[in-house]
Image 1: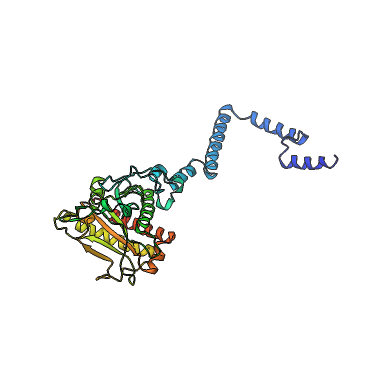
Image 2: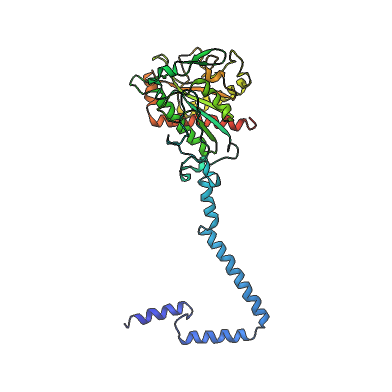
Length: 352
């Protein structure tokens, strides 16, 4: 017990006698009171007010430094802020009613289910693209192979008739194009929705049939979209590799005449962004090695009245490309490239 007293005394002295109750403390208090008695009360009131104001300012500064309201606001912006509702999930189960081979294009706008916390600040919604509508068309569908009567029937393709849809290509190991396009389209949709873009998918799952090429072409106009991209993987010669973008040429019936120039711009943006993201070479098995081919034999382009392109992301029959399309990491890079190309187009065409 005797060792405690010196430590307590030293503490009291260092604190100016507070709480110690010793003689030094009483002397200091008497001096302070005598000094105060000589000061007029109005002056004391002013001094007290100043002390209170200074204390309040100090409290505000300390609160902000320690993570008060401004820090919370920054966290909300980093997660998308008020626009975070625009981030939608791409889990394959939230794309509206199912489509069939006669049409029925499902649409999903902002807020389809992704936790806003999963939206990185780097892709937070942008005022430049928020609310703009884009159609993603994942080529083919899982049920087409068992529905030949439905997909073989002829539909308008822009001045001529063509099959409703096809089964699509596949790798030598059996990985189907419809699975690839469904996966990449959903990944790209998630990225675009994180930027506030309203994304419409032309099919609701990878198990049904269709829709037909004419319905896929009309999806852009039906959704009032500013752009549409149809996602595919080619079934070219096994010796050839690489990707290419297909832009519309004037259709035999001229329906797409008004979108040729803007579709060419979209094609360039998608080609450049996809090459940068994936490192994939331009297709080496086509007459031109520029990575963009103009065609007038595809109903999905001939009947579109909004800017639209196809992208053949790789050649599934080439062993090296087959290894890429079956790699989920590469499919994510493919989706990154498609989304980036679309965003570049939207940002370069603010009035489109």
